[in-house]
Length: 108
Image (cartoon, rainbow, N blue to C red; front, top):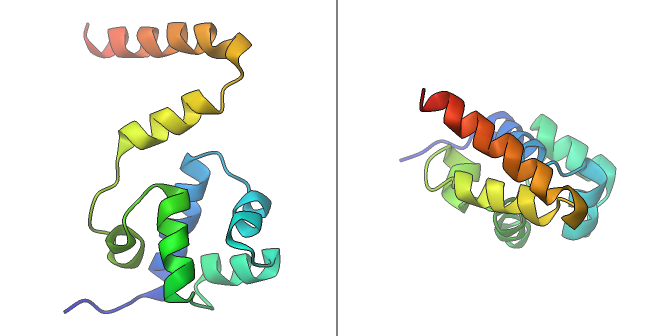
């Protein structure tokens, strides 16, 4: 049986939010909560309801198991998709060139 560690949950929420290049303000708005409440959740001093947990998992593109316990699916493809979707169309070609150079450097 898992023990819930609110501080670790908050850290995973913050880290995943940052990986998606999402501001605290944006996440708070999507969850319909105050910025202060989100700060308290990310610091581990408050928890969230089951409904908000499910919303968090969907918004942050991870499983509830990952948020709660650090296990479960955490898809890097979802992170890449989010970055590409939020990249202005005029910058996508440059992004593709950068990504290709990175991948090529690993294959050398």
